[in-house]
Length: 202
Image (cartoon, rainbow, N blue to C red; front, top):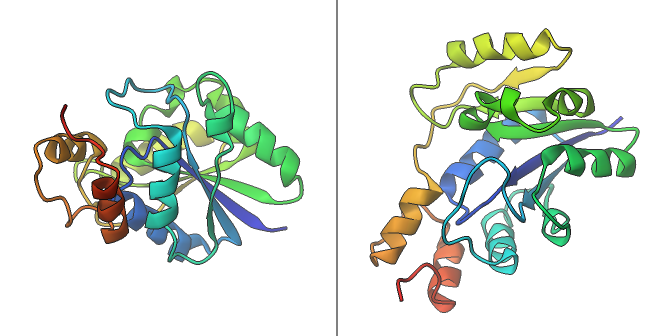
């Protein structure tokens, strides 16, 4: 039985925090493969200035290109409606029926997980893997919340890691103002943003 990780997100834009989170999880769990899935329409948040799926897909391919075993999929982008994680996991469980699936997320997503569409079914389809994205989301806080989900039959794995505090919202604002974001973004992503004149005002 193989171990396959799934890492979804808006990735608007994909940044070094996303990459650091994924690298931490891969080190801890030694997946056979990780599938990165840019979402078509995120169900959990309203995103202003959402770039095209093509641009976000291309940026993910650039950002994760040097991580062995990672592939970027356009599956969610090709669907209609909101990108509910349970639909994604149903699909990939049918593709990989004999493998164990792991759903990777930041602490902000884990702490609101009980509000997700069909979250109890997600717990049956995949183990959750969480890394803190903010200093206040401590390992003890996440472990405490994980226990409530485990009582519903799920498996929740907390990977302790120093958070890389940056948000795509902040980066979009900086990019609109023409500020240098090279310390937060992969150099190839920076080049792609500049070459395609993305996130600029007007």
